[in-house]
Image (cartoon, rainbow, N blue to C red; front, side, top):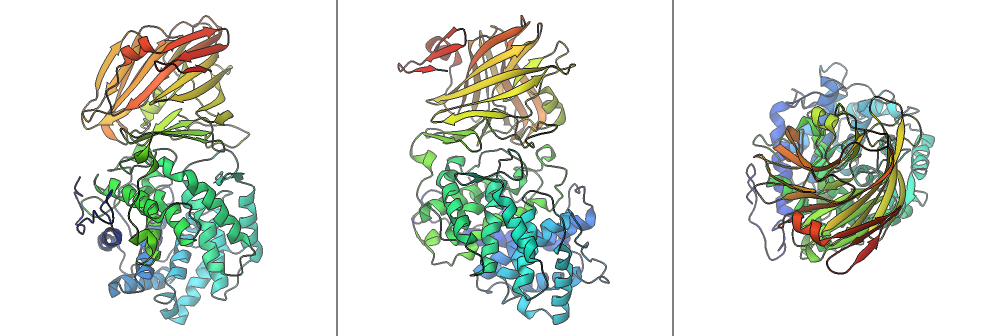
Length: 626
């Protein structure tokens, strides 16, 4: 596919047989984004006020965000080229530092106060200043350096949110230490000590207390400690070795999150950061701790960047819109402003590696899903990853991440509450679709159509090709909670879900498959005990009733509800008029770019239920006790 809004160098199919991309492509992509920001700069370049919906932090904070996050990209570009870039690039950010810290400039940055958005942006500025020290910091007027230090000093003794934000304080105060400015050693050590409470093992952190697993683990929890270590040097107290070992473990399975077309699994918040999903693989190479072959590191990162570029990101203005491909606000969060997507800059960390580094000079090697079908159990987040070589799709089966604290009131979020995510689909996130709650969900449905929610997820088992969890379904209109225990098992290209449900008399039970989306309304078919939706490109989602469902099935259609396209559709099964008490429901879930024949599957896949025992048999003779 061509890049519709970007002029790129010629592809190199010898060095990069899978993506064609080289370091020159990354530099061209960085340069285009940086140049496109200039028309939106304030006169002194201290803020970039981009078009789009403002965040809840306000226009000035959003302008600072535009400076800070793009400075991170500029820093990687400047340092990676040894300063051999357009002098105007260096000058713009040096000038912006002077104006942003000048209270009389008319475009001064907000002061750093406890738990303010400025803390997030300060960390990017600190990293940028450290990486470009010979070209920017060392050449700043002494009075400007003093003002920069004074602005950063708002961190000292300050309070941040108790999650990945602790690391913003760590790197910012370490920068102060590196330039001989007053700082708090206890702030730095306290933040680094705090993330130890969130380390779960096998390379996995939670982002704060609770079960908060998403891309923040890679682009924040692993990234900032090792960027801090670059600042701290030999004065790291032995921490850097620990962080490198953890990243090594994390990266061992990280390539399994990426589809053959380069797309990352669409799960979690802040997905508008897009290219940032590549940050941990570059960090592994930069910290010399990656278990991945250099050619796999570049193939993963370049594949991800190319995936978005070919789908119009950046857009015709050279900007990164709030969304996944184009602008799509339902997939964003209230804290996301028009410059928020520029945390994508983290995905350009590889530019810090010299042009002669093996990640740039060794031949690309395939992703795991390009070599064979993949089944990966991740017990810490409670996920199964399921990749199929023939269509390049990776699916994530979620039995562990809910983005809630361990105690207290729990909420559900479409980016965490679903049973299934993938590299080819997104959850339905527009408010009306989320209220309807069909896709990727098992619901108790009241007579008025209101569905129960999956809020706090209690993981039970995650090993080999199966995982299970429990959640309490609160029946709509009441405070009565009914346990739902779900087991997922993978076989071939399919997932089988077994739901052991307790429900009140008269409730309906409903299960939805993956929502598929496209520019045109997806095709839909239904038959006895099955339903299917298919896009014009052949992406098919199907659900097949194996046990406990009515013959009648349904299709839920939505418009402007999905990040993958304006028209979306989800197949679903129903079981109406529950008798009350316990029931078992067994579903085969399919998502494929191959032909799916759900009627034939229903005939060929057997299911026997005896009390609480479920046995599923497949055409190849395999039998699973679930």
